[in-house]
Length: 269
Image (cartoon, rainbow, N blue to C red):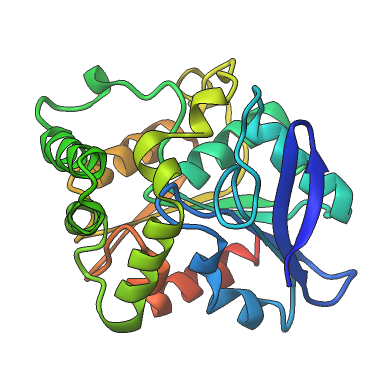
């Protein structure tokens, strides 16, 4: 059963497990999933670590945002409430953007970042070669138009082609279930439109980061993602980037062994 943390304007649903007094890990989910993304990892990691996973505003069991809010403040509230000291933060996609913004706002509070196909605040098209985002734009537009027309299954399949090309079996069904459950957040940005803009943006602070960062990206992901990961690896001092064969955007599902090895590596920082 989820626990709930009161935050300004709503409640955050979270799970916490594992012994106290040991190293801790915070698992953030992507913008097309919810905390169920970590159904495999959460109990496994909790055998030897204090592990937290939570739903972003409007996803899973968390209440939708109707007033302005800050994802950075929400994450800080969770760390404070659970008294987590210098956790490893695992951030895929939007979760990676939140993780980067968090360490810029609160340097010294985090052990390191394991980022999976992350975004970052202040990211703009001129940073990348022309045409990098063409596939993303076409698929995202098709998904949005299908959803607005009431063709939810079609919309989900457009997203599956863009983000979940390597998914199959129960992992594919989990993906479809998470997108359907959180469809207003995924397709309409229901809560995201209330999120306060971040200042300074990560794009202007990358060279100032002084924290271990490992970036994973799948070779079957949205084709824009390796460019974004490479950009971060080039501009963040000491950051490492690793391309994972056979993995898509939900890398922990499609390449679990590579993901587990990366977590084990990061927990030695």
